[in-house]
Amino acid sequence: MAELLNGKELAEKMQAEIAAKVSELKEKAIHPGLVVLLVGEESASQVYVRNKERVAKAIGLYSKIKRYPSSISEKDLLAAIQTYNQDPTFHGILVQLPLPEHIDEEKILLAIDPQKDVDGFHPMNLGRLLTGNPDKIPCTPYGIMKLLEAYNIKIAGKQALVIGRSNIVGKPMAQLMLMNDATVTIAHSKTKNLPELARNADILVVAIGRGHFVTKEFIKKGAVVIDVGMNRDENGKLIGDVKFDEVAPLASYITPVPRGVGPMTITMLMYQTVMAAKVGE
Ligand code: GUN
Image 1: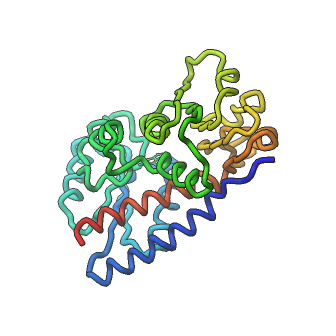
Image 2: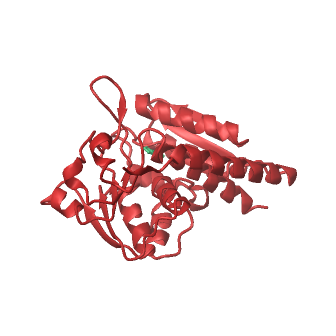
């Protein structure tokens, strides 16, 4: 039976350390600030943003949510980002995704000052990650690396399979695994024989957004299984991309959903915001 990778527990420990760092900065008259730009009324985004604000306040950050109607023009949103780029109150700027169809996400992410891009989504920060000189790193993959490190899980020489190729999880995850000397495969919707491919993986990271997609047929005995999924089942219950009950008996380590990857994502966001503030120390 797998040992649980307890993201909630590690997140709480790291948040206490980050809170101590915030107190230190405040003594030097630096108050780390994070502004979250939320466009529209999407319910999942509302929940994510509220959770981020709750944690930000708990660790002593100055946190502000700026809400905009889904009808806001791209030009006005770009202007808002310019305002926050120039506002020294905020060391971190986060634009919650997804954005409405009429707004070009790439243009918006490019407009954020890379130094304030605490999500790590700016092409400059993604490029730095790719070339091996990272500054800001996308928070979900970063949090997963911290979780593996905390449980002393070795990566070098391992076969890692990342299922999902998004810019914010799959691709940066694969790159972080590569930087830590894993042999990395990225699978996606066109991949053939996925269960067979997955059975070669010592470390399996699943980020496809389909509830209970990964079954026991995907699992090599003793594999480390990381579930990034946050889906609702037909009863509205939060479920991962992995069928936990049948996978856990085969795995050596597994993240639960909830209380696995999610709390680590938020924690790394706070960490990168405080680090951005520390630059002005
Ligand atoms: N949408 C889903 N996850 C995220 C995230 O980590 N950051 C932002 N900005 N938007 C998201």
